[in-house]
Length: 74
Image (cartoon, rainbow, N blue to C red; front, side):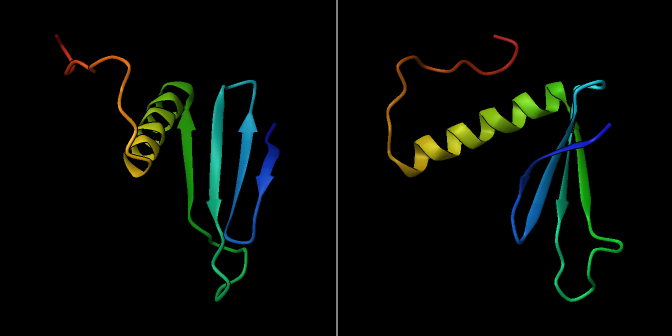
């Protein structure tokens, strides 16, 4: 069962705790709510997305890392 956790003018985020997934729907003011683009992420994909957003935020704020990240497979 999808539960809304964040709703803004441009997008809505819903979660499904049973399947540990989220649904991101993007609003298009020109066509209404029918056929609006959506993105479904599982828990692993959500963690990767959060990691990417945190890295972007650190870059925007010119923060230095406490540790050096190693490339995958190291």
